[in-house]
Length: 338
Length: 146
Image (cartoon, rainbow over all chains, first blue to last red; front, side, top):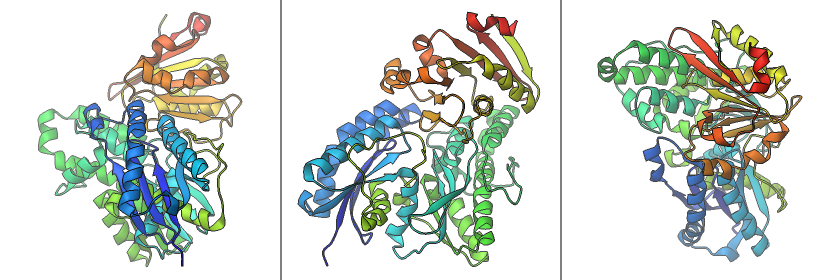
């Protein structure tokens, strides 16, 4: 049988990534430009990011093809994420993908960045079958998505204010830690006491599957003002463990509760915060108690990468759902999700 | 002119949004100043409600810019925290579209020289105990805050 190769692009935020994946979810290359230039600013610099995308994308494309040992003649389709994200960054990836699709006369497949995170699980576990419940948690997203089939889904819960990853970043900033906050808090929290300080858990009602983190942020602000620097230094691990618990606990409880209520047997975790060790272990333990399987991607696939864009494009490739070349990128979630 | 308004409860912030929203017309800009956790996004959510927007208004910090078109007029919600220069802001192209709707900008310092004349500046404060806001209206809106 002929192998169908998909060349995929991801540029919705700070990383440019190019991947070659076949329609059996096998990854041949998945190159990510890590952009350490961002660290000195304590955040992602949007325009800087889109300029770097322009610089990186050509080189990464050649390198990805080379690593996969294929050339453009072998490629059957071009996949790219078009929303949501930083608009300038998205446009770089989309313009490049469109140009390639046009010049090589290949079908273009557009995917939603948030949903493509979910499909990164297929690269590790290609035999997962819908229905499943997915929890997407990153700097820009906290969404609970139920997939009836691989292309029919419904958002059943989401954050009403800040995303989980954003809460890690903002509370880490209040604690005078670096960026990004998630990995730093995760590391510091090892050995800390998660019950050291009780940060609030919002929307605790049993039938509420939305999330809210602005109260957690405010509580951290109040708490930091009530202690001095010396105390903060001394109890850094305990405070990190406590804030991590306040962010992660509602994610675990609500996800498993929804799955139990609706007899869903598989939970897929995805997005940058899926790399958090407390979330991974807590979700597995809690889900397994009720006979529910919890899947998550490898650590590399938790971050923004193009292989997941290819993975999300595979069901569309199989169904011939191609985009026209006048498609636009957009920054918000929009109505057309896949 | 400046007017200080105490925000003793969430309801006070909701009432402030209820008062402010009808004063705004397409092209107007709300500048929302204040530290992390001072209530800028909460206020914007309330403005959205009074514009009959039925989408969930969440934090724009990550993507810088979100637009909501389900209400009486479009609402544009920006967070300029991560931008470093006016040039970067102009590159985003948002000034081409904000004429069509009401714009709420968090961390607006960088945009001050680029904004249209009709703006309402709201400085949110939170000292760990009390919340208050200092309102600085454009002259055309001043009479409503006397």
